[in-house]
Image (cartoon, rainbow, N blue to C red; front, side, top):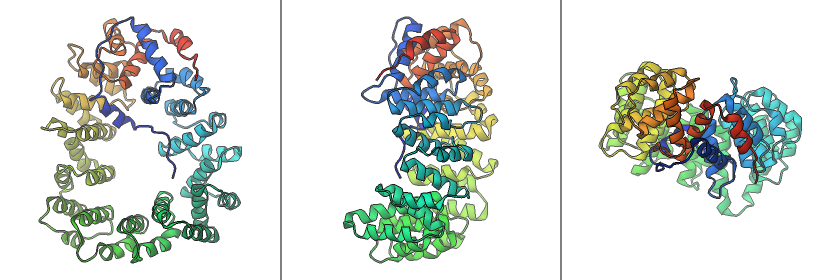
Length: 495
């Protein structure tokens, strides 16, 4: 499917701050802060204004409403996307406003809906209101209909049948798949026939996309076709792998029945690793015996098998996950991240702690920091006491302390500001700046000294990146009671 504009997730965005920082700059802090905000509302050739708008959204600050409301009328549709999503995120019940979407640029409408679905900012009421409006382009319309079907809601098959005639391959493809799920097969058959008439180079990418559609919308009616592609001896190994993943996710017994056959009698190391991941994905159906078949002479495969057996038995889950995590294998780490969200707290917490503490080891890579930032956010949501104890015990100005502080930028909890206020701050180092930003974000008032230092950060003197400088600028103006004056200058936006 088409994806939205490049909205970096907040935890990853925050992780970038560790690597990107500006040198100190002088000037009046009010003027510097206004200049920073102008950068966010004025189109930059490198697209950096969108990154700055995303950072402002991360504040979730109700005082941003006037700015975002003004930006919904911005001449650039990408800015409209951020403004309308930003307003939704500020709301106590985070939901996009269908009226604002209906008055946005058509490109903005499409990307707002895509991102709102990804970020859970759109509910059934908003979906039904947008569909009743009748002014949406085909692509966002079929996405909303797919979401209705995904939530077991009634869908108008006549509208889908019209969309299945669209000249846009993705629109008619998704509409045809949704109609198949509703028992109307002729559109899907025609889509497949049209695919067969295309040059061969189109076949595999289009089939992979159809597999993705089946997984995303849980279209079990497509599984017969998926399975035929999986067992076809002419199918490319990548096609077989992704088709098998689709079977396993939507019908685990059916997928597992094909697992060993697809792996083959003499698999390569790459195939063993990929199919072991599928085995981990299907732990509810997989057995210890199947994990025992994995070679024990390879550290990665051995630890993947250990993690799988732990899930099968319910024993030593945390320790086996940490052992696998320490190998630094990207895809198994992603699997761990997803899986521990479903684990009981007593099993998940040690794994989150290991992810965070990894930044204290030698030879730390950017990926370790990004993972630790995300783990901080997740652990705080589930076990705030443990996370705040980690912060309190972290060495002052250490990378660990900075990482934990970065991971706390997403939450709205007042406890974060209170914890940051307890930290030792003796200068303008990066950790000091991060702590002060968290204090200013959550406090109704701050001291004159802290306000002055926030102004210094906004002007570039806090050793943080531009994505946090912009937050400092907003917080400085807010705590200086200068927002009205600033907005009168900032919101005179142009192309």
